[in-house]
Length: 338
Image (cartoon, rainbow, N blue to C red):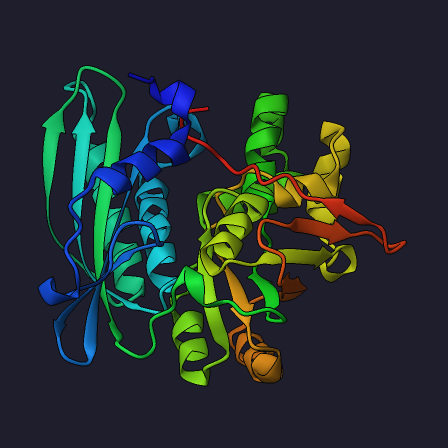
């Protein structure tokens, strides 16, 4: 027997998937465990997309750093990000909460209000849930169901050699916010760091962008950035049987993140690549359709960065510096059990 801390999160998940009795297409299951969300087909031409995420107190949130309504909205964004990574539309959700008996009812109601409002912003509704008592750390869990046209859903496994590596938003900011909180305590509330804290507290939904991109047929594979750019990019490349070569110059300037790196005595590029739950999209884009995709992103007002390309070298994850020197990228992402 092995302990979870010895296995690590992703080996533990791999073992769960290997042991699972996963139904096949005859049972309406197109994609089972192992991607951002499952895909089931309730009827011809429409796929049901199912995902779930859980937040644990002390690991995913501290009451003093996020209000309950924002916490509920953030839990929704974590799930919506998985649905967006499948180019699907959020529809229905259930909410489960494990809380101590001393938890204030107003706090519980505010969490639910945040969940309801965030779901409504993407056209989804809360349709049920469960509330239970816990003697240990409190937790929240949301299960989100969406749907997608059967020929539009994205997977992690569709990237091809030469496809562009594209990221939305500003990956790394959420991780930088947590690093500042750990290093500075109350000093992290300084106005200079507000864009980073807001990137962590209130990640943007990319559902509308994803559905527009799916219609444009430019994206060949996708994953959401929930554990960190390098770790999630590694999983995207592995699922497609490819490697990745990033260009340092492809990363746009991010003054506030670079200022945080100086404050922390850290490397800004490492902050961008390292553990960070930004809930942005990381995409493989057909270079022949890249201009169309960039226009769609610009019209949606979403930052769009071409970071490099997928290469025909499975297992290789590297970046090229300003002098043309290739350097390996550690595949580390956030790991719940390490």
